[in-house]
Length: 116
Length: 114
Image 1 (cartoon, one colour):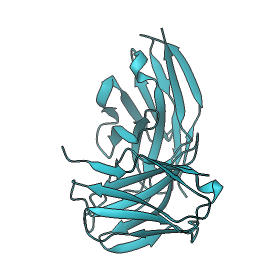
Image 2 (tube, each protein chain N blue to C red):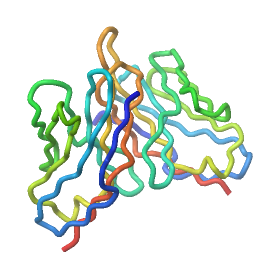
Image 3 (cartoon, each protein chain N blue to C red):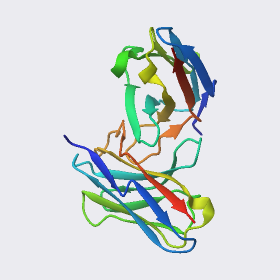
Image 4 (cartoon, helix red, strand yellow):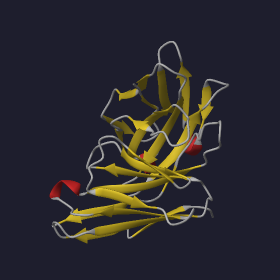
């Protein structure tokens, strides 16, 4: 089945130690998103890639970066995690067509990040 | 700017009872509306969506929702819930352009007990 895969499902890192979360998809969607979801809160968009074009949300901290080496993979890098970065990180994809909307987004299972 | 309000943070119901989870949105443009479900420590699964056409939308697991443009609402309903429906439910809105964020409500926790 086509899907969005996130690894690892659980990640523990130390305060200030860089960490990378990964996302892959077999849907062949050209748009990939990273959301941050803190406990008991709604997901919040950090940034997205439309094809190779990176689009950062205005309030996303510089501490968060992303890479998309190809259509299938996208990475979230947290350069110096703080305690406040502990959250569930959700990857999502959608099919964006030029001149039309992308409608629904398909989510992976998420990676729960703990910062010690 | 778009926003979504889920009017109930928690909804406790008994098994086999009907349930309605309420969602109101605000937007100055045409929107697309979604309901997602999230089980503990899992990602979001799409329940149903309204893009255009019939205002009554049927989704998976027996859920349905009705789009009401005049009241800017998109309430989710199920005539008879099961224990397995216990989860967090998020209403979301999008302008539909590729790459735009889904704007989520704060979520409603549905707790079904026997």
